[in-house]
Length: 265
Image (cartoon, rainbow, N blue to C red; front, top):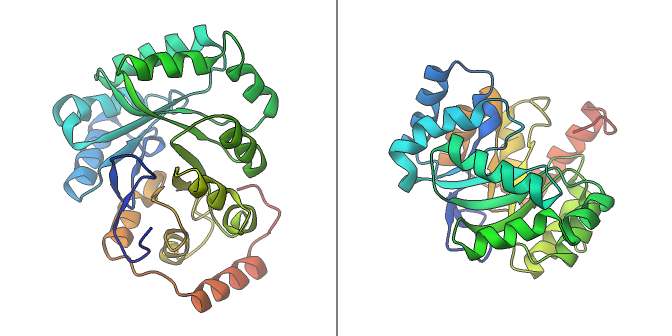
């Protein structure tokens, strides 16, 4: 990872991401016309990774209105919360329909924060079967996992051969993610891509530029902002200047003394 770069390879995949992607949750609360407009704007500004999930309201349908015309410009990642094969198969088919595409570049186990669910999806009749079938059929290219619990992520990436991991990276999660034995180091040892979310802990940290610069200064490949932060985050990415070690230490000290360290992220 080149921390000075505005484009980074996503793990060992063939995808080179602009460091800020479009999180589909951004489109949820917008009228369709406005959602389509902002997605086109993101593409025009250089964003090339879109991420969405069935749990994001009607974001898939709105994103599909853009993908039908500009699919070749987008590395598309989607997700499922289903842990059984039957449910995952149906949800994958519905996502393809709504997104108006025949393929998804990165398909992810969404919100995998429970070891029992990991057992379920990896067992006979579990969702992993659908993921592997879809990859063999060329419907999806890469496989990944998302969630909020680094401890479960560590067990997941040790157990499954995945291409990417997505997790919150901010002052509250810095230690379990960025330490020498943390999630990022373990993912990198497996040549996995790392995608960060919640750089500002749901808009809490201000100014946003400091939060995004801090997150993007870590050994990650891209971050996915949400909501009204999208265009600001894109601008930060286009003009990205990494924080040095002293700046990062001051940022962490400021956040830990200013914001509740135990608040959910």
